[in-house]
Length: 337
Image (cartoon, rainbow, N blue to C red; front, side, top):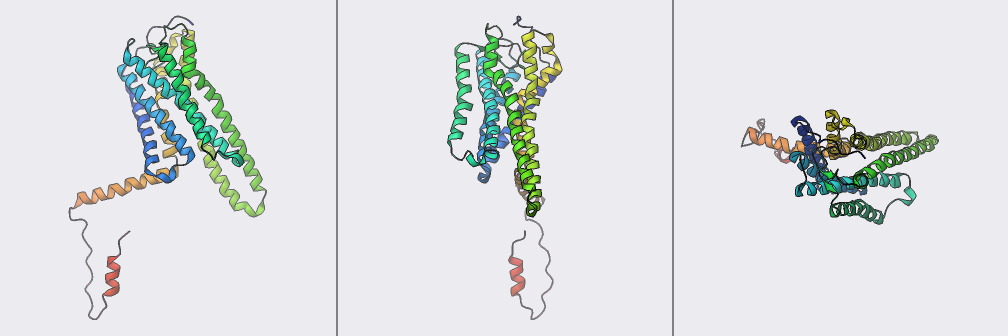
């Protein structure tokens, strides 16, 4: 590997864009965690895996935010701490993303042997938290995490570019798992899509079940589109960090291109926001509940702001002599919807 290139200088506009991406990602991850806490009936096994992914993305966005805000110019203790936290959270996010895709595959394709017990979830925990923790502790103990001149980052700290075996540690602390996810996620998605297409063809052979076939086709089409977004979003966000990694290995000055730097910063920090858009804003059940929650709060506040005594009551028509008041009184006592 050639000697390290000069430090990549971040202009204020680039820092502002990446900081905004970090904030939106943290907000999106927090919204995913909040929906999981608010509505227990939505706590399916897949949503529980999404919760752990959101926690990893939240920690990743917070550590990146601190790194971009500081814009380290040399090695320091907080540089090492920030680099360790971002390394652990980022690597854990890779594993949880693949774990969700693997769980969907086992649930949809292997329905006869679906992951009904908790052993699979414990295996996901051991792999997705344990492997990143071991790698991060080893990197900190061997003093491999430090100042990287923003050539393989955007203001934050990662692997020290002065380390002799820096390429090996860059692979172990992120790039190896990232490249494996590039291959694993599309393959899992293609297997799921192939299974869904076979199920459609098998169901369409039964003439008495034409209406059920159309309903299944609509549902699987929606699920198909959302599954397609998982590898697509991941690759579109992460590919820029891989490009800068390759350029750093080659010693190319193109690693400091402003557009590439901004795309790298957004791609590494916006994973939580992308998951929020996919699994919250693009999921009708959750989106409807959020809108209902907002609409329940806003009218009460606006009515209270209009008049402290509440809205005026409608005038009742005069009562005729001899008319019974029982049914009319009972109708007035019903709460309005």
